[in-house]
Length: 494
Image (cartoon, rainbow, N blue to C red; front, side, top):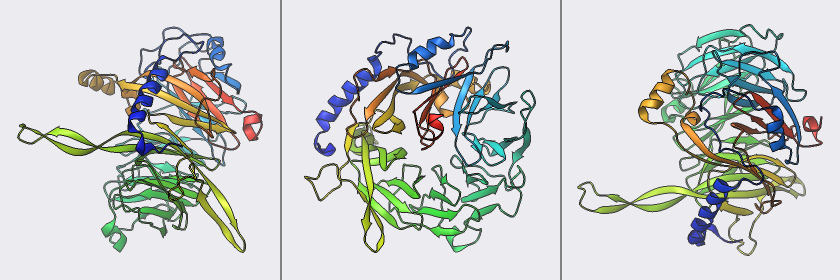
């Protein structure tokens, strides 16, 4: 395998080729380019067979749901698509914006409607599903909580609480959640707040907590949390601006560990296989046990950034290249060099468990290039063009390649925000192309020449990482929701 840091010239050539491929590929699907999430609302609908034909070539089974329905008179315009997996139930959450926003809950296995409710307003953060409630929280700290589980009540509001949680919390990053709490990085107290939704939807109860406690020794060195935390039923993990990775009990807020990353992190932490994955500006990717002990450390060809995808002992992460950028001097009479970053590499790593007689297994990174035993290389790399992994199923790696640009000028953007049409950051961008590739997980290469799909008609695409649900979820602006799922294995095979 070639070493990324020795082949920058080849990288830029490859980057240009890949961008051209992503922009121009259409296979057999000669359709319009992808639409912005705030494009003009559809005035007419395509038949479902139009979209089914585009998905039929995927090596997956297919189900769909028509939000508009055969009896509904008004069109449905989809604005968001989310998939929830927890111990309560799996569900698809769709948010529309026709005649005021609504949220729909669909069963992904039999594609029946759980409920539909009007929303008070759309918000910037993703929905958070606890055992009894779906909570929508905005950047100003206001929240709405909706009944998740009781009867259908399709045409009635399921709103059970709204306002601000105790302490008037203002999030510094997107909150996380498990089935009992939501976890809010709070700017006004520089703390992590665990807000309990066990007994009511207002976060009032003995189970709510704050870390660190006000006035404690930990509070004096604690700084603002700028990245989204990760949580499961036992642990909340989050990166603090003091370069520490904190692990606290998700039910009580009790301190567990705080390993030192030594540098800033640009990757929200991920919990998977009872391991915590995070990258740092030291050019390293860490795997930690929940005790805080490092399971492995691997150097990366650049600075890890963005979301880390972990599945089946594979890790996928993007990196930034540090380079010297020429900038004008303060007096404007010359230039100087300043360190800057640009997209570098998309890297695939693999880890494994090694049995140790009489002791617990050891985790280690598989070396992608044994000819250089002094460093653990990626299994493969490709130029970073903003791609992301949606799903891994066996050797098939479903990857989405998108090209986007800013869609609006300052005045138009302000108008759309005031009208409530733009709420989320990603809605400010226009998608120029959207391509799905099915790659070989072992090599990163296209599995078959025809497994390259133009997804321009699907405004929303979400991948499932659950063992019981290896699937792609897709939605169109005009109100269709699709689930393309793998045969066999849990819900995906039913």
